[in-house]
Amino acid sequence: MNNAIDETHDPARTSWVASAQGHGEFPIQNLPLGIFSPAGGTPRGGIAIGNSIFDLKAALDAGLFSGEAERAAQAAAGATLNPLLALGSTPRRALRRRVSALLDAAGAERAKLEALANKILHDAADCTLHLPAAIGAYTDFFAGIYHAENAGKRQKKDPPLTPNYKYVPVAYHSRASSVLVSGAPVRRPHGQRLLGTDTTPSFGPSVKLDFELELGVWIGPGNALGEPVPIARAGERVAGLCLLNDWSARDVQRWESQPLGPFLAKNFTTTVSGWIITAEALAPFRIAQPPRPAGDPAPLDYLFDEADQRSGAFDIELEALIMTPGLREKKLSPQRLALSNTRHLYWTVAQMVAHHTCGGCNLAAGDLFGSGTISGPDRSGYGSFAELSSEGMQPLTLVSGERRAFLEDGDELLLRAHARRDGCVAIGFGECRGTIVAAA
Ligand code: MN
Image (spheres, rainbow, N blue to C red):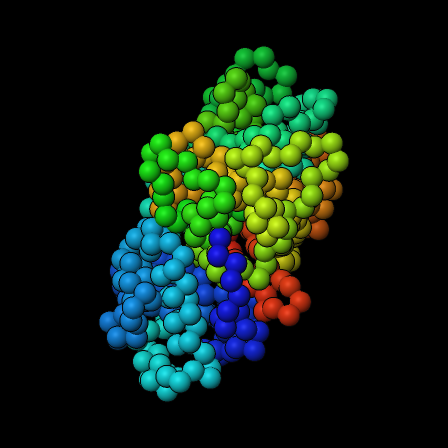
């Protein structure tokens, strides 16, 4: 990834779009990319700024871009961002710098922009967000080490991690067709499950419907089949990040995943937040990959790069919250289930890319990775009900008095993420939410 800090990160920069000042998610230092439809309009590329969306097509039509930024804006004017993602970081960064200058409260063209505001800005509340890209393929990793350890402990494995875990960034190929954008309802799936003490399966709605708190990774420029991406160049393939909820039917999963990995337990729906938080916006929030505990093996050479170890990880706070019918009835706020951080990933995003391609697999612009559930080291950071309720054996009691071992119909699960650092303006990811609706 491009870690350069420039004027777009300047904490002193403010926007003439008033709602951007102090905005918890989208201050002028963020400028995330997405696909939206204004009321009565067709899908097109946009950039979130405060409570508004900057319309890249309208700005292009108004002649506000030239050079590399114009190339990027043209690639973002259609119904998906795949063409922009394919261009890589140079045009994307040029677009960011130009839009930041256009929205700058102290910008030279402020008066002209304000006169155009009714054409190039839309109230986000009046717009519909879509998936930012047509997703060709979606891969889900297992890089949250506490989640992986907790899964092993529940299965009484000693040691809890399988011997490959610290060598291989474990993953499975998941399902792209059922990835939905935040806000779409999530239908409880049917499947084969073992109920209670049954020894033979029955078919019916999942009774152990779960969420997974994950980081999503949007792939930028792809690689040709048969040409692995070396670890030192792997970060350049990452266009940006989002939140990802890998909804999971645990009862279906336990029965079907023998000996192969998740199938119907995971393929009914995955929800992502709608905005791509670009690699450029995240530059101030890069950190060193936390050192491996003594006794852990070093990554094999094809997964090791000095620069990646020095600055390839992220410091992003992650939250999972639940809103239930009972909380809603009592006019209570969503209740936090977990507070975690991307520091708890055992592998960097570049290592995921290098590993995914090391055998020659080709990635394409708009492909999506999930990081794996990012749990913290103790219960306050557990990113799934399987961990929070010990597979349902210890249900949680919510402040409404309701008990939850897994998700019930009518429950809404909400993921949030924020990157904060002294001397920087904090940025957010927007929301990743979904409400469970009854099985068909
Ligand atoms: Mn997952």
